[in-house]
Image 1 (tube, helix red, strand yellow):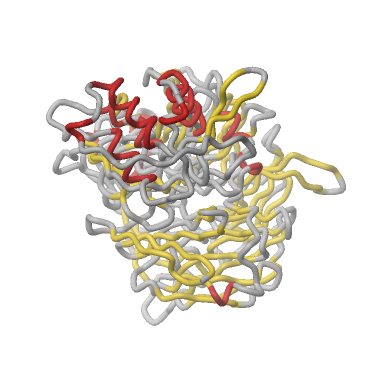
Image 2 (tube, one colour):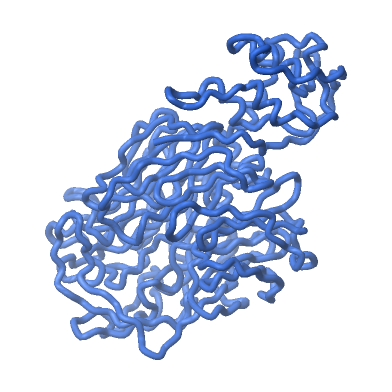
Amino acid sequence: MSASLDRRPVVRLAEGSCEEIKTQRKNRLPSTQRGGGAEGEFRNMAKCLPLRVCRDSSGFSSQTPHRAPPPHLLALSTSRGRGEPKFSIFSQFQRYYGGSSAFADCGAASVTLVTLLLCLLAQVTLGQVPYERIRRAESEPGNWLTYSGNYQGHRHSLLAQINPGNVARLKPAWVYQIRDAGKVETSPIVLDGVLYITEKPNVVTALDGRTGRPLWSYRRALPTGIPACCGPVNRGLAILDDMLFLGTYDAHLVALDLRTGAERWDVTVGDYKISHTITVAPLAVKDKIVVGIAGGDWGIRGFLDAYDAKTGKRCWRLWTVPAPGEPGNETWAGDSWKTGGATTWVTGSYDPELNLIYWGTGNPGPDYNGDVRAGDNLYSDSLLAIDADSGKLRWHFQFTPHDVHDWDSSQVPVLMDGVVHGRARKLVLQANRNAFYYVLDRATGEFLSGRPFVKQTWASGLDARGRPILLPNTEPTPEGTLVYPGLGGGTNWFSPSYSPSTRLFYVPAQEDYGQVYYKLKAEYKPGNIFEGGGTRNLAGVEPYGAVKALESETGKLRWEFKLHAPSSAGVLSTAGGLVFSGSREGWFFGLDAESGKPLWRFQTGGQITANPVSFLVDQKQHVAIAAGQALFVFAIE
């Protein structure tokens, strides 16, 4: 485990109105002529740091003209561990500010060590992200402070500089090359011009938003031979106060110092030897870090955890497969609950007013052979509403009872307020992997409406409670059964988007996608795949992908933009009237949010299996997407 620091700057803050200390800059001194110790470093910094000191009736405050020191510089003197190279604070600030003649020399104006320390501490607090700041993420659209951009799961940017009139001028600002081969699914956290990304297998990197140059990188060693599904991918981080939070492929939750990447704490969430893994981006809620688990195809029993952000102590655990004596256990035959799956591998949403976390669950185990687990198999393929403080289940809605097609309900829940059947409601929306679009009351879990949004052949519809009305002869068999959609579903883990401007729900869909489902004998062995069957594609049939715009309250199709093949790219909508997404062939593209008309595209050279984000750098809107083995960041030229 290590964190390395880069000396390059990134954070800039707007200039405020206060009085500058104007004196002549002194020449830089060799390190041997500077004062000794920390006090000497700070005193000499006072002579060369381009500091602006402000006074009011309450005392001193500080601003630095044009730009503040990046947070990682403020921690250099205290974060150094044994064996790490010694960095001079003095030289780092010189490197950051030297060469800009617009800044004044504070040392000659009798700026004391105390004043300077107050100034530095003021800047440290600016770099923190308390819960209330995440709760009000819409008030600072230049940042991207949680997985979906806000707690409501919208993946919508309120930035509007890039719009249909100028999007044709969008060009790459920089490209960062990922160091390890494999799929990249990261969704960056962006704070004050710094991008924090995950790389496989357990790597976190802070990037300068202006240049893409790494500021620091953390790497955690990964055990070999982890028995798990789908490769060591990671979808992102959570941020809270002065820390970042990473879920690792070997089922640990790690807290990192935001400024330096130094490890604060590391706790074990599950046992990777029996296929517990974490690929999900955690969710910071109040003083807790909520994290899910993956491994449902390997026979684990799913759960959702919350940990104290400061200490790493577990606050609560909600088992998504009930044990004997708990409500819902009667939906599992015999001991099948022990290997029931229902994992929590995609980030949920949160309603601060109701204090409810909304989190989807995965398929039951074994995937395709339901004979050994008779019953509805709660709480697999469900949306769970969970009290954020206690971890208690408030309500659940099961989309696919007794699933035998591997249709996880892990899609991001989208929260919005709307009118259904003439009544104003607090809603939660989900375009489900089973091919149906659902509208629920998020306070009660009541089913309000639902309809297919892609081709499906397994249900004639939904009843008044939202339960699917099954068609005959749709279960897997040893000989094979053709069903639409295929195991990848009508959509999957990649994020949808909701635009408050258009009130449309944008979903990356997989259309005309059927497969032949097979059932095989299922025998559980720890650390081995536990599917009980499989699937086969249809010869001569080419499914396609699409970005579909649905009316949020009804699920009616407004428009669709077709792709050559199903895509694993998420969707971002913006207040500028655009929708961004990507394709399997490597195209990153922008559409008109009202009509779906294609307006711009760029060939990244690699398959896109990630979600876009948007943010400001130097007050200029940027859009970022991971593609192939790189992170691309775009801006208007």
